[in-house]
Image (cartoon, rainbow, N blue to C red):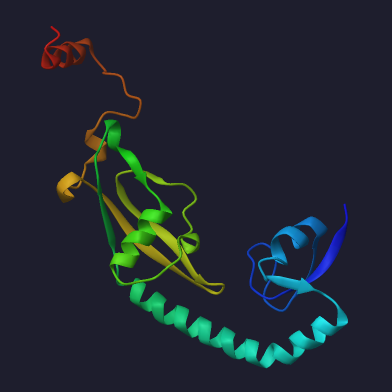
Length: 183
């Protein structure tokens, strides 16, 4: 595989920070980094140009970080609440995704990109959660999220049958059939 060296113009997760020279596969550089202006080829001329821009870059970095810290301070006082329909054992019909969280934050007056919300997988159960929001490379805030039943009702998940649960006794089956009008 052919590799090439590029000079990063922006911070890229799992690759490097702004101003670093990194070695990447040529296709990744050609098809992703260079067209999106996230990096430039690491030629001597480009390195000199970036060195000249470092003072402005440091100033911009400090401004970005202070803005992220200010926003983090505001977000720490916030608790998001989502109301969803409930199924068996506290499992949601649908889920709460990073897009839902970003939309709710926008309604609260915070413009945060959904890709900055570090939600490994959508929330599919009722309860209270903390979701990390990465506002800056060095600033992450833990956002408390509460998932409630319809009408803002807190669901007692322990009182519900276990997930994928089958009734524990035959009398429960008879009651269920009778309630449905089948028996």
